[in-house]
Length: 168
Image 1 (tube, rainbow, N blue to C red):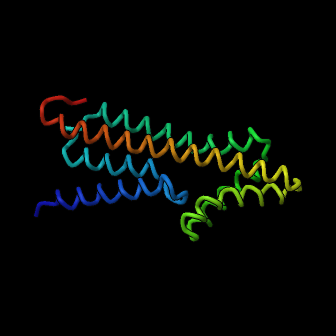
Image 2 (image 1 turned 90 degrees about the horizontal axis):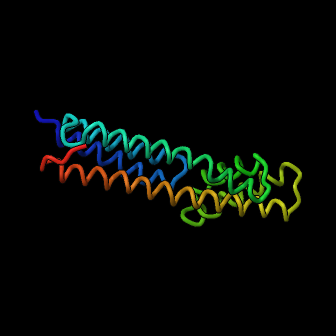
Image 3 (image 1 turned 90 degrees about the vertical axis):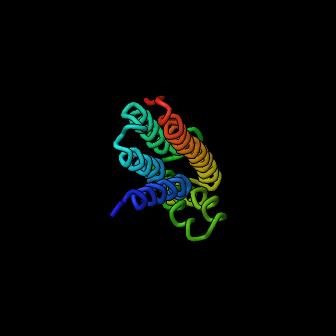
């Protein structure tokens, strides 16, 4: 029995779940995209998608992971938020998933505000912390999506041109 089609389906599903995970905070989005693409390269014995391409995509996944942590913290710190605001935003983002798009947009903001309020900050400071954390998380999500699509684009480019002898 040839398992190739099933492996491609698995690689595709993991990649799609990874794309969803770049927006949904509970999933490790870009690392999942990388895993799906890695499986795709493995299917072809790394002949069409070579180790250099895998290395570039791995480096992009690491950059996205670092940005994920730094952007929200930087946005929060820029407007004077504490670590409570960051963790509140993270919890708010996870809870927000259950309330659809509105929850995913407002969850981090509300969570950061509540985190800051729980530390004794006033309403104005808590609101500023919420805005800063929210801006950081939105920017991080945009960058992570861009990196994920860049990785997929590199993979598709190599897959298409790799059969013509252009491999990395």
